Image (cartoon, rainbow, N blue to C red; front, side, top):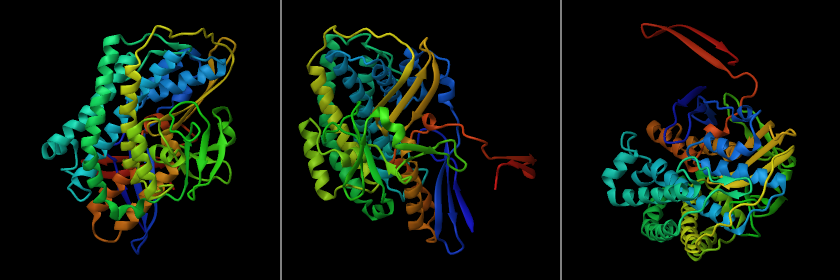
Length: 464
């Protein structure tokens, strides 16, 4: 029995390693993602003011801050029974479309892009964004422009490009100017054109990876919000679809605890989430959203989704995350153009007062279903917080795909290809680890004492 360790895993958000247990015959018994950092935000939030949650939780992560911003404000408004104005809702959606576009572009072109466009068999020295800019400058510049457009939309509507501040309980603190709305509409149109030009690049890259599709198969259920069959990123019923296409169950945010349960994982600060019904694994994110839903509300994205669903439904290979992410980028670009063209008035706020209660919000982050739950005392001070983050929902699927990809190349002598392929399997899920970590019990620890570079003593705690 041997163990292969990839540490650290690169081009992901956060710090992690991958361990592969391989038997003497070269068979991979198990692949496991171990998340090494601990943030513990759930504990940090205790004692803080409820109405500050949209600002504070946005700082959990620099990659998906708008998702936490929206989950927090949605949870508070749900608990208070507050309904925001149409203008505030439209502007929040505009900001969020920028966020999804930016995040998906980062994942597809910067993090996974070197794998997709340079090949998994390229040397690790080559597979990076700088080499991509050198070898494919025209495509790379278009890709980075998409990311900039999304980030600029978040900055204008959200008040800050990285950690938005404008969504507060009851609505929005400010609206973009008429000139800014016009600029964003033109950027949306530009993004649609850029994605049209990049479509063939992604299509050709995915064709070259067809031989790994089956190794990335996920025989689990898909979970996503749905607006009567339409893709939505905001508070809506949550649907679970099994691999054969049957949908069951359906639940609202306030009922999530009756359907989902968290589990501690070996050697990791991130918990796995399962369906309570039989501890069944599932996956979330763009792939799950396009399995559960059959339409958007924009023409180009609808056409792409229709073609996507004719190939197979539901799609269950992690490789399909790439195409699903691309289709969602088209949708976001179209919505940025549409929403910006409608302009904005000053009808932004309704009254909201903090108090005691339970506050639960559920949104679709770029990486999948995100849940915030807070409990407060009579003064509106948090006594308890629970966050279920998208990457936690994908934990079992990630480990499954890591094992599948490792099994394809284990024993072939292609160790470099094995490692790059296993890392790519993880990047398909676009993991975001910092906000998904929780402290639970006693973590294993190994300390190596060295003298002149030689290990002279090893001490450990909780290591089997």
